[in-house]
Length: 250
Ligand code: PEP
Image (tube, rainbow, N blue to C red; front, side, top):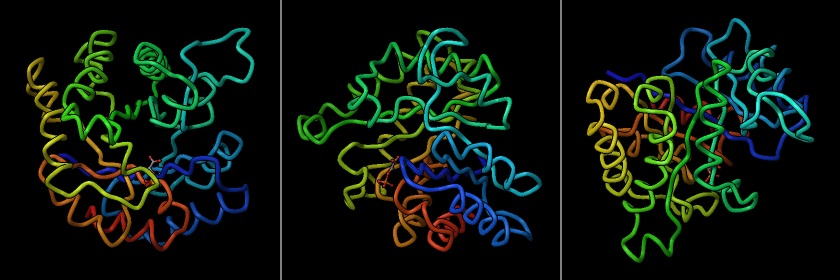
């Protein structure tokens, strides 16, 4: 039985005070035990504050990105070692906003996945198709390409220390959610790609759904057998709504 994970991707929102309040609020909500694993992924300047506030609580912390390099003259980049040193557990890699706005291709995403793991972070590998690709019936082709690029670079064993997030681009920040059946179909497909390499790891790896998850739709999506929680953007920015989503994963 896989324990569910609900991770909040704050994107470029928040402040130091909000970080402190949100993590403390979640810790108070779940002082008697969390219904699932909970992670918050604030912007880089607030990660250390989040790690401090999360200490001794059920909340864990992840970064929204990580450099593919370990050290050097890479202005503006943040290494996995730096994130691990301040107490991060996760690093999101391959979010569709970075793939499109920062021109990150499959090879760079795979390099970031490896870099995160070199420093003991668990990558949350985001994959997902555009609306145009879905309408052209290319969802499986796109998702398979994205997953296989990382499989080829890292090997199946690496997925025992990683999380996958299926995030259809047409559902991110749009208010339009995949139906539970649509999500389940792609999640099962992703697990099948891993099963072809190693059945035990395929059964172990968490596959999160992301794309306009909110308190009102989380339970029906999380009830699907291959959905192991969610990567939540907009609805992760306030305690009550995010806590309800976490409860839906219980
Ligand atoms: C995301 O950014 O990963 C995301 C799923 O955003 P939203 O929940 O706002 O659609």
